[in-house]
Image (tube, rainbow, N blue to C red; front, side):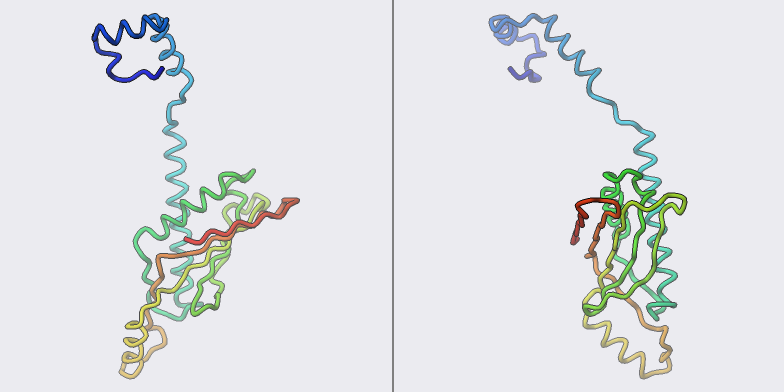
Length: 193
């Protein structure tokens, strides 16, 4: 029997139906009291910790892109879709949740795919005091936007011909590859988002 909101009303039909099936009002209340103790309350400290960890991971990714834009990408600006780094950070946390050391045991290789060629941007070590237990390879993708190459063609002909005038636009899609470092079966998980 499933208890519904209609059973809490003082409807004599509902109460007599319960009594006909052998339920006492006291036993029904005891069952609900039992579940109050079994179902855990959400731990606010864990929620706050996960949000803080997610935000610091977002900052690491943004710093990686910022450092790479002039040194490895040769551009002046990198345009990142809204919430892209947030989505990536949440996926990284989800993939690290099953690992023995969690995110602390992660080494992340950050790459950018431009015209089917992967360019290495950076390596992020989440906690250098922990021996890595898994690697993540993050592949950002460039947005295929024809007008940006057309615009860059015009800017390269004028007085704005500096090599650092190019703007790189990232796609909202990315790829995460997880490789366990200490596993007998050597599992690799590939997620395309």
